[in-house]
Length: 346
Ligand code: NAD
Image (cartoon, rainbow, N blue to C red; front, side):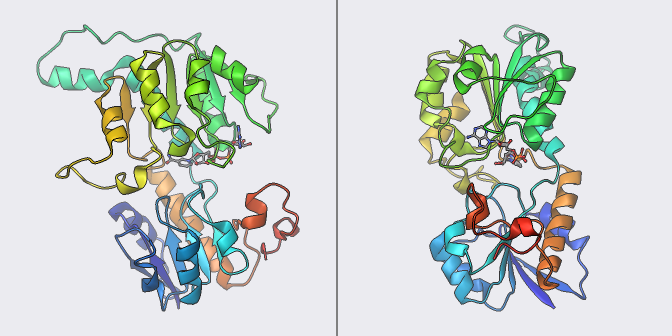
């Protein structure tokens, strides 16, 4: 029997995993709290840790998990910026779900844009109060506008297709450009200066940390719309606030925030919000924040559970691990990694 310690559980996670679980083969203990240094030792007696985007998988936690006999960390997400791969290398295998529904995230990015632009969230509140006035609800046609996509991987490419349907011009910046007839690749600075809307779809790495900062914002068009469904650390939030105050930034749709770990996914409606930057962002009437919900569709939840359970099965059946990622292949070069040879990374 494979025993899985499942951290940061929400009801929708439990539902999707329980519906697919073969209880003769695997047993899951659901913990509602996030994994951190203080609680990592509860993993003693389990074989697998299943973790999500805001669980702490830094060196000290990895060492505790290794000492407690954890053999594999199954990330039930695509991004892995919260994992210290160097610490895990040759101690614990790490697998993830590289794609569960890129449509879910791209569609949410577009939802943030269209809601902010056409102010449907404001109209909803107004009409419920019998206020049928239209003042202040003016948007702009997306048709003919230029959207700049940073990162044209799975999600960025789907967003490009959606934008194409709206009749938008699509420009993009990616260090590995693809050949797609309706996407024009430009330099980072050209993207900043030519886009009416900028949407972020690259991973968070040391290279992309604060890629949207004071200098980048200064190069953007006046009233630019910024959409971030990727990772909070891509944007310097203080620079974003300054850009909103100076009216350089006209709209900001954020599904992620650099310091989200203590807030997002939780009901804090009876608490005092201590993060002044988040509180300031929430105070702007041209900012829309959702709490990392871009992935949250039925299809995505089902795919996440399916792939995570398969990743775990593959590990225990000793075969190759299709969705493994390690210290070597998470960085460029893959010199000492066996993954491309259809083997485990180490
Ligand atoms: P992907 O790996 O398919 O695509 C990422 C793209 O970014 C690649 O084309 C890559 O070449 C490009 N890239 C890497 N470094 C870059 C750089 N320095 N500058 C420009 N481009 C760069 O990933 P994906 O599946 O499209 O996911 C993108 C991101 O979305 C993930 O990294 C994750 O952080 C985020 N995400 C968010 C949610 C959510 O619920 N909000 C859900 C899933 C994924």
